[in-house]
Image 1 (tube, rainbow, N blue to C red):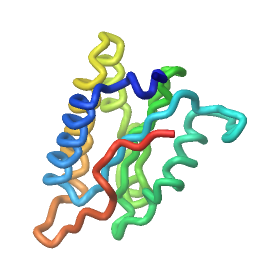
Image 2 (tube, one colour):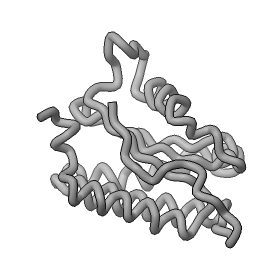
Image 3 (cartoon, rainbow, N blue to C red):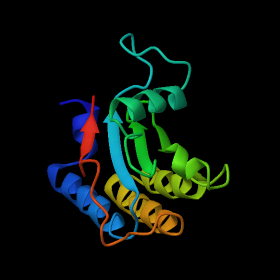
Image 4 (cartoon, rainbow, N blue to C red):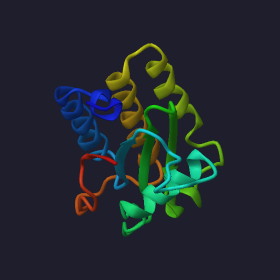
Length: 151
């Protein structure tokens, strides 16, 4: 079993997905989590973790939401790297350091070995922060799957 497969138990994965669903009841934003072992591989050579997160963002079609309000929480498990990346609709409205507090919250739990709790708390925080810019409306549609992807 790889470290990516061991990162969350099946039960923890269900709890993270539940957190995504809950967060998306507060915002029209779309939240995804993606896990992979390393951000820089022979198949995907990149300069840094942000460049890889951008590739994954595009691959997962995170930029295909009506309001350009997709959010990716990208984790390179073995490299211990995390990036939270928002689409242009978000980035055009929020300050440059918008994701900093959420990243800090998640990584502080990770450092304590509380992976699931860090992701759940971070996802809830993302939903809370997005609701100010992209509130949930009764006619909102879930545009992206609520699941954890990996490669």
